[in-house]
Length: 240
Image (cartoon, rainbow, N blue to C red; front, side, top):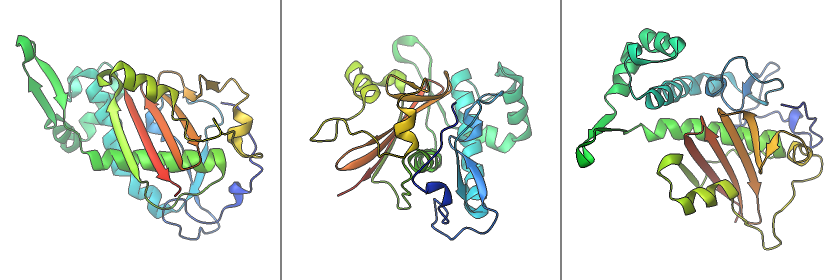
């Protein structure tokens, strides 16, 4: 990713993005998106936001759950021995309790005599990570802190969206009566709009691993992301 300078003053913001607590002299630099959603070697110039150590530590368990859940879903199994990536197998082996918990969320169905594996994940834990990253994207790209809880958080596998739903998700909402709104002057979002980082309206952090879009309209801030080209997420803060 390109290194883009912010001119809104957001980099000098002195409150934790999540709890609004005043930051001390050495805040925690938190990557957005979470590093565990990316693959090593990581892209250059990954976005970071300043948060308090308590919030940073508080996200760890939910992030680890989502990271391993995605690996298990994409491999079709929570068994360490079934993982194509030895690093995933090692992580599952070191967290047998979490591996069993994820395995228990598998649901087998037999439609038309073909066994299908579905998953019933812990939505609250996934939502926590989605919102954490969405807040970070809004702050880093637009310089606007959104401390309150969003009005809507949703996620779905891309594969189960209808063609119309997929098209609407990929295109994004035209929320403004004046058409598409350009980001504010001085924000990273405006500068980034004219760089190779943006493909079809999406900021591609790492190809096939993570892309996102921050949409600012007259009535809402909407953050979309696609993780591993599998999981689609949407977070909305209403401005009314």
